[in-house]
Amino acid sequence: MNEELDPILIQVTIPLPIGMVHGAFTDPGRLSHWLSDAADVSAEVGGRFRLQWKGEPSFESSGTVTVLTPGQDIGFTWFAPPEFGGLMNGPPPKTSVYVRLQESPEGIDVTLEHSGWGSGSAWEDARSWHFQFWDAHLQRLKEYLLKEAYG
Image 1: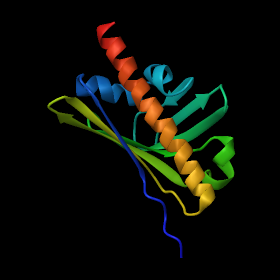
Image 2 (image 1 turned 180 degrees about the horizontal axis):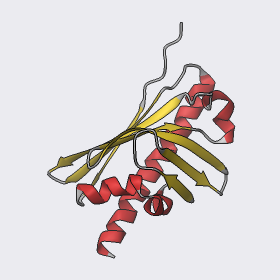
Image 3 (image 1 turned 60 degrees about the vertical axis):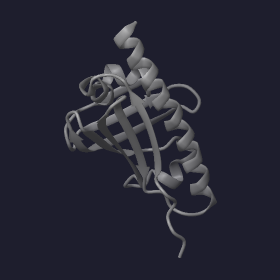
Image 4 (image 1 turned 180 degrees about the vertical axis):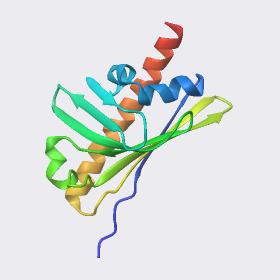
């Protein structure tokens, strides 16, 4: 039997207070500045974590918050863009995202883990696309928060 692919693990360090960084994952108005075009989040376990993109590809991830500890972490189920929807979107959704925040000498280490990948070339393609997606968006998060903090 084929083994699942390793989770995506990406880390970025942001030299700002932990509350400001955590809020960028739970406040719909802030999420729409760095991650999606629109967001609808109910920041509680079992709450909505709905993100919409209007560009190419246009898609919606209608996830659910699975973990939430203020100032520490957030987890949510993930729905992929149409290109990977048949593979990943279930029901139930096959992958999930977990973000952990930890203080470090340089600021807040943001570690994103996207897990639940299957095996085979279609899953490899989906994982590669998502790695690039998350890597780019975590850089956008850092740029957005630094601009928000310092102008």
